[in-house]
Length: 170
Image (cartoon, rainbow, N blue to C red; front, top):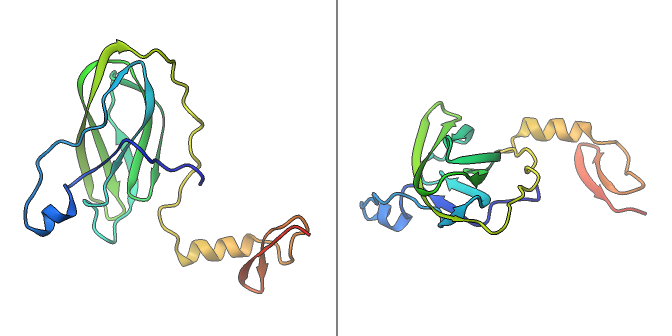
């Protein structure tokens, strides 16, 4: 996958230094302010909420009539939506995830959307490719078996007696 969320990511559960001291943070995570009609990617990082063995199985952003979602995706423990804001004001957006262990987690993220219209019309980029949150031996075995058994002349991966090998174009 070539695309990864890099901005407008809020992390749940407060910072680790607070949690190590036995303190909690009750602040509502907040995305940066924006304008009516603007659009961008918005992410929530659930790393501090999930246990070490949990991964995200499914998720949803509850934008209702406040925004139009172009796409959603996940990258590890981060869930992302690309949204264009259709309502202004101080908005509260629920975000829910279902973990691989069957637990559900929900967070509320706030964003302030100015009533001033955006001067640019947003165009959502293509949705990122599907991500695999974890790589396991079964997935690797399937991939290795799908590779050609001789080096491709135009370069690429091949199955070299059970070892994935990359060949450069000749």
